[in-house]
Image 1 (cartoon, helix red, strand yellow):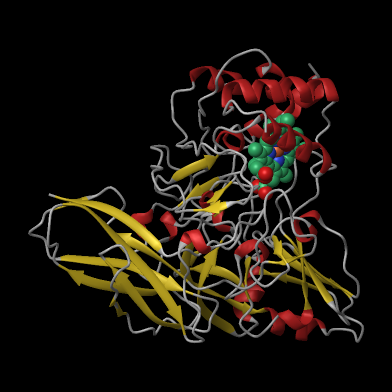
Image 2 (cartoon, rainbow over the protein chains, first blue to last red):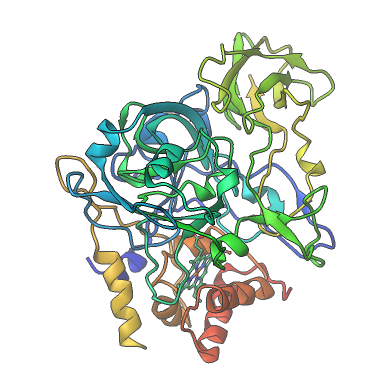
Amino acid sequence: MERRDFFKKAAVTAGAAALGSSTLEAGITHQPIDNRKPMDVAFPEKRPLIVYSDRPPLLETPRDVFTSALTPNDQFFVRWHMPDIPTFIDPDKFTISVNGLVNKELQISLNDLKTKYEQVDVTAVLQCGGNSRSAFTPTAGGIQWGNGAMGCARWRGVRLKDILDKAGLKKEAEWIGFNGSEKAAYYETPNFIRELKLDELDDHVILAYEMNGEDLPYLNGYPLRLIIPGSYSDSWVKMLSNITVTNEYKKLFFMDIAYRVPDNATEGETPEKKFPKTKPITKMNVKSIIGYPVDGATLSHKSEVVVRGVAWDDGHGIEKVMVSIDNGKTWGEALLDSGRLGRYAYRAFRFHFKPKGYGQLKIMAKAMNKIGKEQPLAKDIPWNHGGYKYNGIDEVTVEVV
Amino acid sequence: MNTKKLFLAAAIAASPLFAQVSAKVEVPYVAFPVKMGAGFDEVQANCLMCHSFGYIINQGKQSKKFWRGKVNKMIVHFKAPINQKSADIITAYLFEHYGNGQEK
């Protein structure tokens, strides 16, 4: 069918709720859009998810998935930047090249990667820096994500460091460029390349080929992607094909303009007066999301409710999660899971209560990490033009009947 | 309308994606709801070669200044080959159908 026909048919709703925005002197921050529903069309290897775009594929995980510490592969969100993704990858022929300022250039096959290097596992949260962007008014640049541009998985692969050691870094090596296989449709559009400074890369950074015990799903970067535990996912390059070591930094749109926040103490600015200096988003801040119940749910007044959700930060570790069912007047401490998935993983939490009355009830969750950082109220988060790093106290409102 | 651009749009739409699953798989097409009206042919010719219509409608209803800014962002940052006349028509179309009634 021709593309034109699809526009004429126009049957399916993409679920883009309108946030009537206006120009404001200062930006305001509120709860992100939370009413989008999965589309009935399923993408390859995925269950139906919230769909923003088919080309490139942009899929969001619905809130009710966030009740356990691992996110199933078929419900894991999907985010590509460029529409041109290879149409076929042969696992027997695929290689990753390591070149630039190295003593020995490498071409590593998938099989070599799985057999000739030490295999390591890390469970880590993958969260888009623009997750929850729809919390910002006026509308911040980029896709207007709700809360589900994130997930947590057990990744298996090989340490980047072991690969670089094998290639041998030259003395002047300073930057590492990572190329994925996604390509822009137009030759002048900047490609999605990431550059990381050598000293930002620690032992936890791996090249992963496996996710939750299965091959990486195609849409999550098959056959190989970069995993940078604790950092936002903008640098977790998918379908990684090339690693180049350099001594100087190249100017790149997706490094120099996108994925940056104001370089000041609050990381905030006003829409009329953007802060001139910016810095990369890098490390994740502390955040939690309620997976059950979801916003708008109906609960019987007789129920023994167990609120469930997940909490995470950049690896300092979650200290506790507090839950309120009285608009934030009082808070009770939630129970946390064992934490045995490691400090980069979600901590699943649960909180039991019995509704005391009827009508609307707001449930709020607030995480606190081991260095004393806690989630602010949405309204206290300063606006930023890229809509990055929203981590407001989560809220769902249910109806007790 | 520029035939080269249309060709590119068609090329994206037609490329199937294969995963490491036994059968060939294809990313489905999504029928994003499009409001038909004056200027849509310019949107179709200029705005859909790099991404779907979904990129546009998830922004919600916005001001004229917002839409002009987005069209300019595509030209300046992503090098979209769009001339001024088309940019004006597209801005007017977006504001008409996905506008919030405010100039800025």
